[in-house]
Image: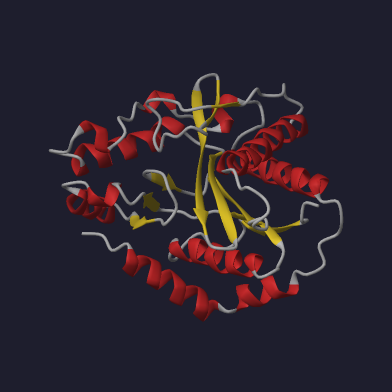
Amino acid sequence: MIRPVLILDRTHAALEGDVLEHFALDELLCRYTGEGGPAVCHLWRHAGSFVMGSRDSRLPQTGTAVRALHASGIDAVVRHSGGAAVPLDAGVINVSLILPIPGVSHRQDFRQDFQRMVSLIQRAVVQACRAAGAEEAEVAAGEIEGAFCPGDYDLSVGGRKFCGIAQRRQRKAFIIQAFVIVEGSGSARARLVRSFYDTAAAGADPGQYPLVIPEYTASLEELTGLGSGKAAIARFIEGVKQVISAGNAEQVTNADAVELILADKARIKETAAKLRQRYELP
């Protein structure tokens, strides 16, 4: 039986502060899920951040590129899940599915894990378009060459990417993380990533980083009829919640421990500091 999923919506929390605290919270929730706690769908946003993959941090001129980001008021960090560089702002909704790893008698196929997130985002976009009275968008899965943070499970509409997916595994549970560009200009965000690689990858082998073509990335606002600005964001978030709620066969009743984790701000900050230290930038 699939464990019901607790919805943790933190998209209305403060957008400033340390972006790694969101990843730290995912880590702590994942440990609790692995110990028998609820599966969780964590929704969050953060402004003014540039989140890199570990390979990005090892490019020849990453230090110079990071200093340029800092000069522009953008914080730069390295995440512990897979993937490449992603800019985060108020128009990007991050979705973390935190799920238990089945018992040893079950084979765990990472493709099924990714597909669960693909299905969630596809259905959420449909719900959001319906709420706006718009035509349902056809969301395709598959790598979009030229988009930033390319991967086999890129999500796109009409050949333009709006969502990327990565995974982080612990011993007893795992996290599927998606960034969804809901509103604003996708190509403007892609130009920021292209500028980072133009500096950071100077002298690197071309196979060490993605070649970003700004026109291959777009937002759901640009690709669908779900609306613009705050309305688009609200409709997408509600779409995710509706899909999760529809998939819950029973009521989630053990949310108190999650609230305790959220209240333990010192532990979250300590975990975030460890992540920053572990993936220290040049």
